[in-house]
Length: 46
Image (cartoon, rainbow, N blue to C red; front, side, top):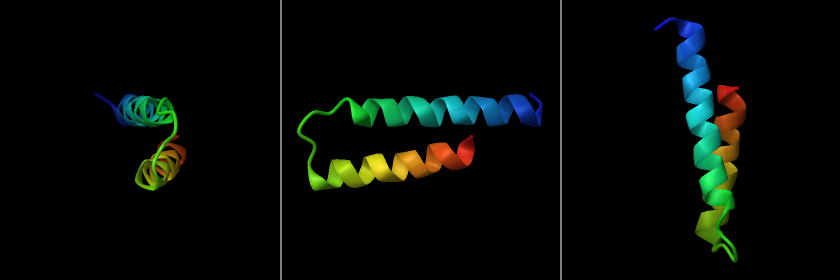
């Protein structure tokens, strides 16, 4: 798999992970922090 496809796959996985945590209603402080970190990871992956 070339580098572009690998990077795209990682970005898609990061986005899916972010979407999963954003589905939590009435999130705790830890879940909020996890969402922030997942956003940062997704942003860097893209």
